[in-house]
Image (cartoon, rainbow, N blue to C red; front, side, top):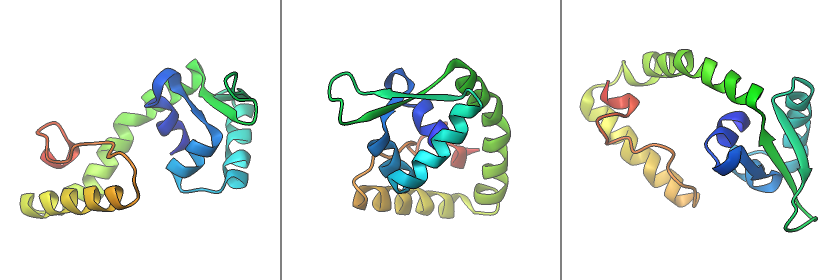
Length: 122
């Protein structure tokens, strides 16, 4: 999830604290995850040049290639397990429920589930 969040962020970079919030993780736990991703060459950390109290995590080109390579299989599996068993009406309800939950969490909805291009529409 951390790599996906970075992949969709401007310049593929987020403050570690924002990434922890997005992934629903503690900063300590996320730091361990990002450490493992750094060892694979998929993420790098550096001080935030605008405020040295923060650390930025950036998805590397190799990390972006990994995310892009995994995306089709991931999307197919989510569709098979989550959306295919539901009727069209249930898919719309799930989208509405997800949007309400994300709104309550004060997080942006990563996908407009009501759009014809969403996984629920296929």
